[in-house]
Image (tube, rainbow, N blue to C red; front, side):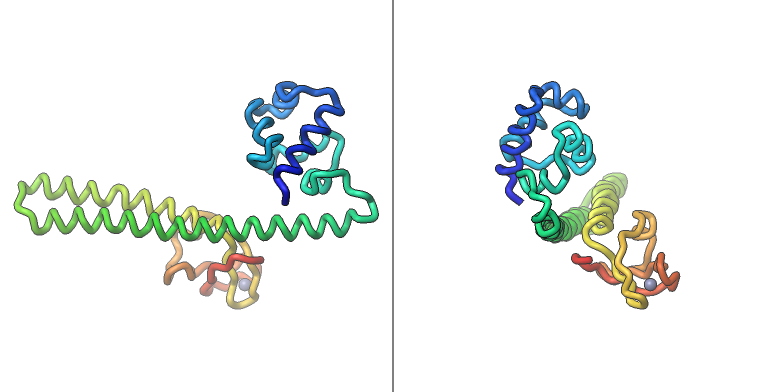
Length: 202
Ligand SMILES: [Zn+2]
C-alpha cells in the first residue's frame, strides 16, 4: 500500500470537492493535523474514519486503498491485492507487538527480581524491605497485565481440536492456564476446553 499515493489521492479528491482540510476535519470530527498527515503520506486514516471519508470524497474503500479510482473491470483484482497487503501489514504489526510483549515481560521481571534480591540480602530496616518488595511487585503486575493485553490482540488463538482461529476476550486470556503463549481456553466454536496456540496468520 502506497501511503504517499493514497495521501495525494485524498488531497486531489478533497480539492475536487472544494473542501478545505479544516472543513473535512470538522465533518469527520477529527483535527486538521490528522488530515494533513494523511495527505502528506505520514499515516493512513483510521479504519473508523474510512467509511465517512469515502462518502464525503465520493470514492470506494477500494479506491482509497489503491490511491486512485479503480476501473470496474480491475476492481476485484485490486481489492484482492489490497486485502492481501493489509493482511501483510497486520502480520508485521502483530509480530512487532509480540516482541514488545517479551520486552515488557523481561524488564518488569528484572525489576522485581532486583528488588527482591536487594530486600533479601542487603542490611536494612524491615519496613524498607517490605516497601522495596512492593515497589518491585507493582510494575510487575501492571507490566504483565499490559503484556497479556498485547498478546490478546496480536494475531489469533487456534483451537487444536477444530482449528478455528479467533481473538478471545481479555478476561479469558488473563485467567487461563498457560505454557508460554499456548493457553487453555474453551473454544467458541466447538466448545471444547483445550490448548489453543498463538498464531499470526488467519
Ligand atoms: Zn474448537
